[in-house]
Structure formats: structure tokens, C-alpha cells
Image 1 (cartoon, one colour):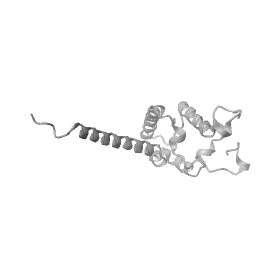
Image 2: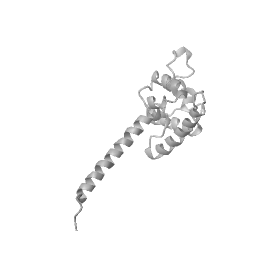
Image 3: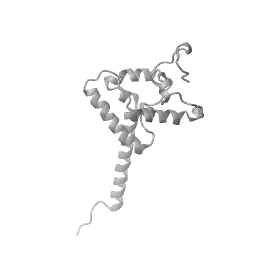
Image 4: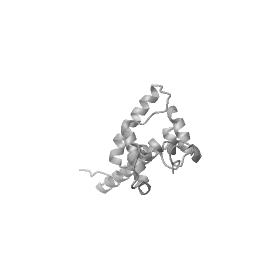
Length: 152
């Protein structure tokens, strides 16, 4: 009876290397699909990418604002919203895609999460941070005299 040429430790090592490569590939794919270059590949998102690149949040990836930070929540959310955006894009919708109610809640939660030190005790006049601070993420800053609300 001939013994297998691959010993158990070789199989474990090969499995660990393959598993690690798979994890690193998944992380790289997730990071890339969170990025402005990826999001702007759809023609309806080009303007959002341009205005975002000129904003105070230009150093953030799109999904640092537009997706949950918790990976367990992020994966199904990103799949569902990405599919919705993809379908709208192939249907030929030319208007910029608008955030749905679930996305609006995620964006608002992320605003509060990142800016918790500056928003403590703030009484919001509207439902979402971006109702007053709409131009922060996707517009150049306007001169103070043209702002409807402070955006700093």
C-alpha cells in the first residue's frame, strides 16, 4: 500500500496559504469596490465622483459614508445597493442616483460616528445631517455668505 505523497502537514500548509490568499484577495476587492475610481465607472456616478474629489471628505472612500462600517452589515447592504445602482445604470437612467431611505440612515449614522465629538448636544432641525450639510461631501465649499448652514 503506497502512502500519499502529500503528507497531512503539507496539505494543511497548502490550505492555509490558499486560505490566506483568498482572504487578501477579498480584502483587496472590498477596498477597491469601496473606492471613488470603482464607483465612478458608472456614467451616472461621474459627477458625484468629481464633486467628491473637490470636497473636504475627498480623502475618504465612497463607502466610508455610503455603507455600514460593520462588515456583517456591510456585505449584504453593499450587494443590495450595488445591484440596485447597477440595474439603474444599465436601464439608462441619466440622473445622478439618489440614496434610498436605508442608505440615508446609514450615511447619517456614519456622519454622527465620525463627528461624534462635534455633534454632542446638537439639536437637529431636520432628520438627517446632510439635510443642512448637503454640500459637504459632493460640492466645493461655498463662500460663507452663500451657505445655508455652516458646513465645518
